[in-house]
Image 1: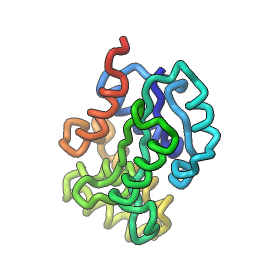
Image 2 (image 1 turned 180 degrees about the horizontal axis):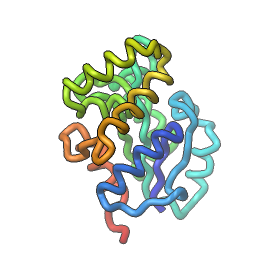
Image 3 (image 1 turned 90 degrees about the vertical axis):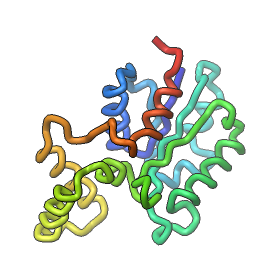
Image 4 (image 1 turned 45 degrees about the vertical axis):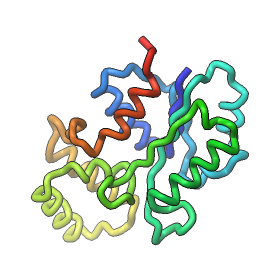
Length: 183
């Protein structure tokens, strides 16, 4: 059994979209929701106990957002997040059967899954979306991420995200590796 540990419902939805694009069959049994990023770093998390005590599990992929170092000097930003998730994988004795994928804008090494998506959107569309968001007054992080995602999906309904863009290489490669050998 192959498992993906992810932050929340939206991340699960995004991972399913990428798997669909890759023709990887996946179902809810493959997902363990951690709730939020900080839960990944709590080694006593119930999900970790379930994973370690399940002999059917052969591979695990940790998928978490980089977030921003300015907001969290310990876990925020790609480098901090990577250092800490590697430590958790080692401490839990899951290192040999697991990998991690940190979602962010690959150019800035910070952000969220949504930031990864928007790193592939043409600049002229980003400017339109930013102008709309500025004029609409949505300032909170959660509203901003959700609104920008919905806005882009409405503006480009046929193919909102170009999964062939080089910025998706890391997550695609890790998902392909996770499910390699399964028919």
